[in-house]
Image 1: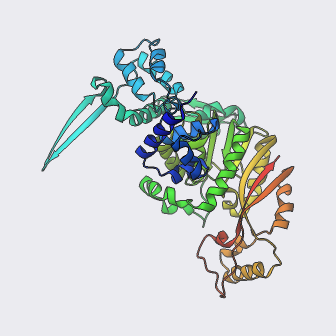
Image 2: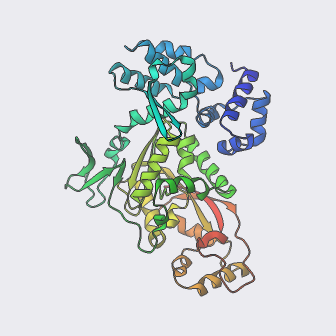
Image 3: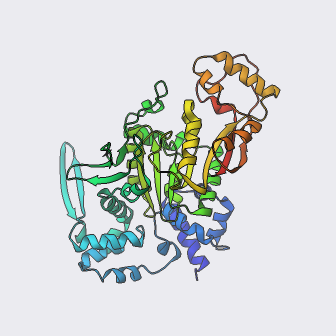
Length: 453
């Protein structure tokens, strides 16, 4: 049984060390700040399904979070043929690394495949002095503050030589000819190859299906470096509106716990970062985008910041209008803005997702809407957009009211769906000029859709 007072003290300490307020932690778990307050005063405990995401956010194991003695883990690892120094390293990581990866690391130690060193640099005026330290020579106490860094490095080392795309190639097909795909790894490269010898190289961990962003809509061109990506990642999708959207999607995922999930149009991971961090069941998550470069940055960000041992992430630079998956093979589709980002052929993207979904399985996506095309507000907005001309004409044909959406969504191939309004459209301005330079849907309402094949 978990001691409420001990748990409350431990939680408060961990949250403070992570620099999180009670409200921020609550937002990350999609619960109220009042719930966190109750946990930290010892008046209640988290529901069991929240323990894993809570531990992941705080960078510790569930065992550490609930107060289990880590010596049990260390004792279990002594069955591996490894030194006392390595056991000490594993024990230091047991607060922040899952048991699955602790055991994998122990196997690596058995074959002497992991070596941890730390570089200490001293700058004195114009002189620089460096010293390399063997981490094994450090004491158990001095290793504790390094636990999270050691764990992240260990995760990256174990996963670096392994691409989980090889686990799902049985479900994949060549987007050019429909042939079966196989994973091939050679000394200096890895790639997918189909029966008809169409080859797709895996560059920097991303399967490159040789897709390019649509002419005139190269949205990612302003992200040229990883530093730009990190700088803009958190604020790109950060809003209360999206948080409500994301919470509904995550709640639906938790109901079904799908084993194979495809995210349509991942972009800069506004939604996908939530999935990677908060999914608490074993699954393969496939992130898709036309841009190989953006997916490359996504992968680096996951490796450095979001590693979750339960989620195996696959990165496919592909066209979501022609997914490299066979019919009826995917457990779940998610898309937070990805379908609408296809613009010209968004209908093809919807229908393609239906094709690859298993029967009776779900697509979870958000969609913009207007209440009634014939209302005075809608007519005014549509006039502003029509008068703007140019690229606005493309978007003009993608604006639907609730009645139209009720007919459109089944036409994509879904057998039934529910649409939940997240926010209503805003009133039009008292002007003859459309007020936005980009993001034409900024004035529209937002809804969350659960659609079943």
